[in-house]
Amino acid sequence: MPRVAFTPNLERHLACPPRGVTGATVRAALDAVFAENPRLRSYILDDQDRLRQHVYIFVNNDRIADRERLSDPVQAQDEIYVMQALTGG
Amino acid sequence: MNDRLLLGTRKGLFDLRRKGSAWSIANKAFIGEPLSMLLRDPRDGAIYAALALGHFGVKLHRSDDDGASWRELAAPAMPKLEDEAADGKKAPSVSLIWSLETGSADQPGLLWAGTIPGGLFRSDDRGESWTLNEPLWNVPGRDSWFGGGYDQPGIHSICVDPRDAKRILAGVSCAGSWLSEDGGASWRQSAHGMIAEFMPPDERGNPNVQDPHRIVQSPSSPDVLWTQHHNGVFRSENGGTQWQEITSITPAKFGFAVAVHPTDADTAWFVPGVKDECRVPVDGALVVARTRDGGKSFEVLREGLPQRDAYDLIYRHGLAVDETGDRLAMGSTTGHLWISENGGDRWTLTAANLPPIACVRFA
Image (cartoon, chains in turn orange, purple):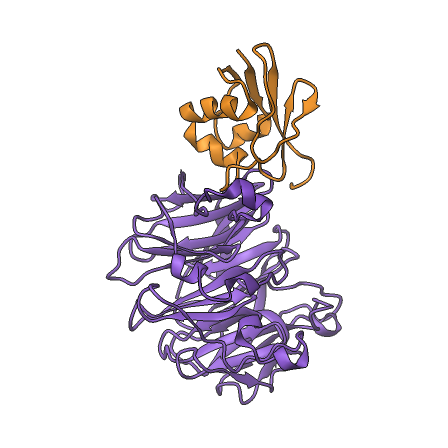
């Protein structure tokens, strides 16, 4: 079960503790989180469900390649980190 | 007079109250977060705060207890396009709530929001949900709208006619001004008479390319509207369908802000800057230009304002006049707040260390 963790800077806006979810892609994993925490979606994705410009996602140590569809695959043991970029502050 | 002033700044909301003759910060919220717009709804007392979080997008909050607590609402969002994959990065997403206005007294709960990338949104439930105004989004020539200052076009001014709330004018940078007379069901371009010096000669009179920085409507004579445009001042006397350039303003015709007197349509205030390539006060002296004769002449008001080495810029929503027309407030990019109690004749520095101020509204 992949584990999704969010930048602590999001905590000033809403609670989003790390959690394990099911899903074979970054999109599926995030959708599972958003299903339980709908307000979180607009903090991570824009109106077209693309990754926001100043948000980065890493799967383990690698930045994801597909910022639009979030189709990067994830395995059961993977860690998905949702970070804020240094730009955009 | 309004004894309350709300400021939306680069790093939070500040709620100022006047006690005796002194203003002080009575409350603050969202410290550290950028605010783009504020609105206090006189119909029900609700306060709305629009945020533009650098990383996490546009957010909208409402307070139903006069600012003691806030609740996040759904922010205006562009409809998700089904063919977004094919359209790629062109598919729109709201990046800024640039204007927020109420409907009329007999339209409780109705709000309008103007955004970048140029979408006008309507809420009928006090901001709980928002719908894009498709007729304006899809007007012919919409693809030719362009950004002014920002990368994408934006709606910074929404004038709801106090005589008829179905008559709505939206000011767009850059696409002129758009007028609806049926509550938003249809729209027509209305920036006729504005001149865009930044365009090639044959295009300068094209209303679709005009960059009105801010448009305000006289509450007492709603046929009169004033515009601080990218390259000058314009006034309309027929409800914003035809505009005349006002050339008497001094010391410069460039600026962002304009405010109109609540009961005298011939009185308006502007804050000139050098020009578009040099957005600072002329000669380092911050001044307010006031006309009291419909733009035939202007007075330059300096008393109480810094007259040397001042580089304050007043953004388009950074100047406000209260319900009497005597009290004005002006907030700058340098975090200075000035208030005048006598129509701009004399100003008092009320705060000097605020974050850059985007929005000033009496409440």
